[in-house]
Amino acid sequence: MQPIITSIQEDAIILSEGMCPMRTVSIQAPAKINLHLQVGSLRPDGFHDICSLFQAVSFYDDIIMELTEKEGEIIIEGDFPCLPEDNLIFKTIELFRKNCSDQRGVKVRVTKRIPSEAGLGGGSSDAAAVLKGLMLLLEIHPGNHALFTMASQLGSDVPFFLKYPSAVVTGRGEILEDTGHVPSLYGVLVKGAGAGISTAAAYREIDHAFEKGILDQYVLTKEDMLKAYLHEKPEEWPFFNSFLETYRKESKPLEFISKLLYDAEAIFAGLSGSGSAMFGLFHSQRSAMNAEQSLKGQFPFVERINFLNSIPDAVVI
Image 1 (cartoon, one colour):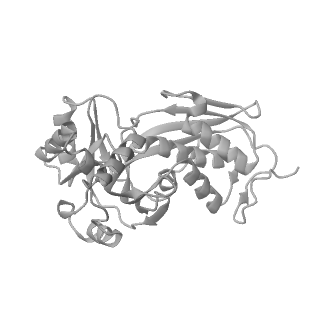
Image 2 (tube, rainbow, N blue to C red):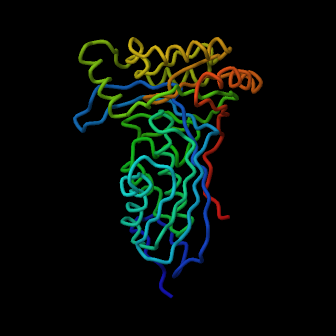
Image 3 (cartoon, rainbow, N blue to C red):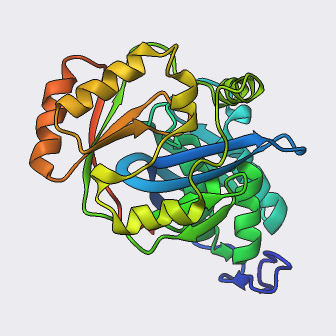
């Protein structure tokens, strides 16, 4: 029996010969928070340079994947606000098929928990999880270079969710450096009522702020950011979020949530990504639980989290 052709990448691994047995694969897709997020001005390619500190946290979308009998078929089940063909999971499967020359049918069931337009990376994490799930489901590894290239093509945050639980992220989001450190902290995520914040709209606000001189660039270097993260107490971190600085005058709800988190004895609070989710960090699980209880009656979305020490792998169930 001839082996399945997977990729022309030098580091590609062909794991199967012929059709692999029918199986079901499960993957947890974690959320992330940005402990620091500094946004630069618009680049010629239409992206922005960022300098950020990403941390994966224990709040997940759950994804189940299995093969179908019909070649070329893609079935996606889940609560999504768009048509299946516009979904990032659909695009992930199509891109993987194109790069790995495999057209076997795939069914994906997603239990969505991470809210959209919250800055928590839910869509990007789902895409990375599906890439890992496809490798296990189809018994194909396209090689690390091809894998991370596909991830970058799908979205700036997608590569992060493939590897490191804590990373310095630069470029447009595709350059990752492992911090080698995950602090023992606990947290609470909070999102207010109403619509989320579109990432594209948020970046337009950033551009407008630069044009009007409202926002400074390159306030904290990558080296100083990492030094503070590794050696300073969270209470003393000089971290900030460019989006929150941009919203500050017009977004009283975010400021209100921040105040409530500090009133609940958070040692650090911030906005994740471009929003609209805020997070507060605590030294103890008990403090995080107390904050969660005090905030749950006031906001529709409140979740207690831990910092992850690793990104979950896909598993056969």
